[in-house]
Amino acid sequence: QVQLVESGGGLVQAGGSLRLSCAASGRTFGRSTTAWFRQAPGQERDFVAAITWTGGSTYYAEYADSVKGRFTISRDNAKNTMSLQMNQLKPEDTAVYYCAAAGAVNLVQYFYAGIYAYWGQGTQVAVSS
Image 1 (cartoon, one colour):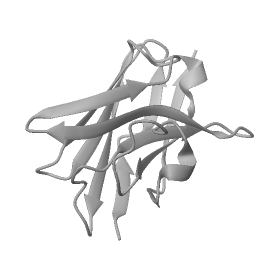
Image 2 (cartoon, rainbow, N blue to C red):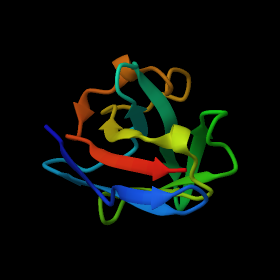
Image 3 (cartoon, rainbow, N blue to C red):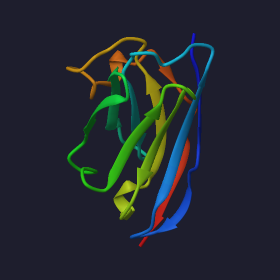
């Protein structure tokens, strides 16, 4: 079992930045794929970014087109933490952000919520215009 706890959400003006963190306990991330998703009111949970450790100090990351170039996902396997640096925030980035862990490597379906076995409780991000 993996317990995930997000932090770092808040209210920010458009153009601003926030950094979300996800701390895992109970089991290490290891080589498993981990990700950030977000869910706006009345909408489905959408993929934001995913990251997989490929060995040594190398990680493989993928991003949704809507955040590419603005968000950066990172992970520290030694500390069992994952982060999402969000820059140039827009009002449409407003959502509850969730961290997720797949429990295994998945470099093909990383964008699909169904492959993630473990989820955090979410942290609210609100971007004002």
